[in-house]
Length: 253
Image 1 (cartoon, rainbow, N blue to C red):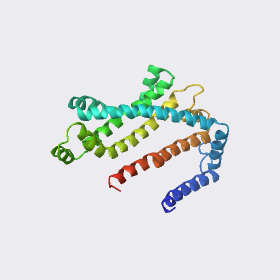
Image 2 (image 1 turned 135 degrees about the vertical axis):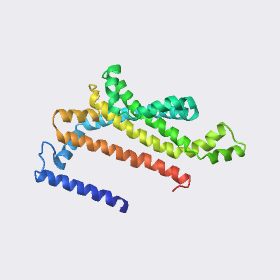
Image 3 (image 1 turned 120 degrees about the vertical axis):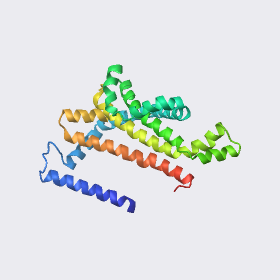
Image 4 (image 1 turned 90 degrees about the vertical axis):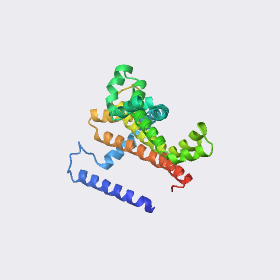
């Protein structure tokens, strides 16, 4: 309870300021609906199945796109680490491409794949794979050289050094890279869903876009809260327990 106290207090203050700003008409209700109006939209959209359906569509796209980006990022990261030629070519390309905002891939995706699921997956993968590849490469390079030398002194080589020394030492940092890749995938998907429209397959990004088109700020804020909530839950119940597990098993916590 003590750990949850400060976040709840901050959230309560934020909610109080929001309610006061709307109740006192400091801000036009067209620009900022009240918390009650936003909650009412969420309840109604959940009751008619619109919000749940959009959330499931978005999560499906996220999981598929992130999984492909994760596999590609791992493979590319290992290649950049192991090959000097790949480090000088693919490593440099990854360094440049990972700085490109995800939304910049959307026009290219639409031109290549049209208004389709493939366009969305392309944006998610491109927004994920480069940052993840660099994170994996950095994690592998962070393995203390003394560990590798000690393993060689004891007769280990090749496969055994990889599986017994490098990978175990790099796993915690690689997990942090996967967490970073997930965040990039989530943001990339929102950018893709705002611009790529598929009939009968509306995701959270489309609901956000339609709310803007209809000037429905309660819908915009409601969907934004759901997007934030998904990110918080993923960190709290997926990545944080995994990080804690690796830290505990290695005596770091």
